[in-house]
Length: 145
Image 1 (cartoon, helix red, strand yellow):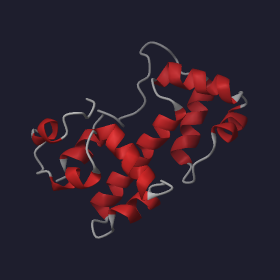
Image 2 (tube, one colour):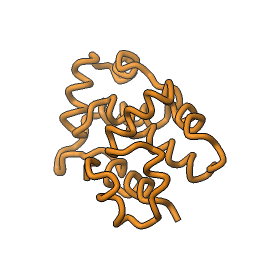
Image 3 (spheres, one colour):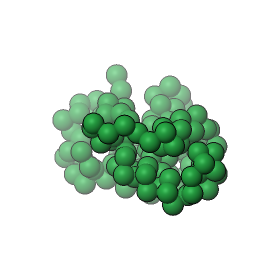
Image 4 (cartoon, one colour):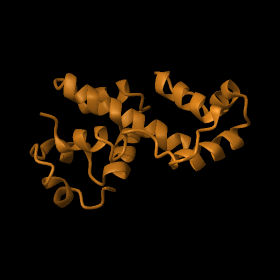
């Protein structure tokens, strides 16, 4: 059974999808940018994504944040954390650093900063928690919900 941290990210609290403003259709460029971000294993720069969707980087960034509630970087980081958690579930013998690098982070330090900012606790703290989601708030009080 997945731990709280996996359930937290995979069941809509953070990564169930972008927070799309209800009743508003996504701009085609935002839809295409989401597709590019989901399909690419190697991170693309905002300039490259903007070129692919035929918008300026600033216009794409503005539209993306307006319609998803996240910046391109935040969305990318959340996708990487999701990938990290999936790797930890399917390949538990791998080290945290190896999973972080395979998930697309440039270094373990970068991964740790992003993970801690997203959850309020470090990846080792999350691993040591029991599989009971009730222990999440007490162990990581600063994590957003």
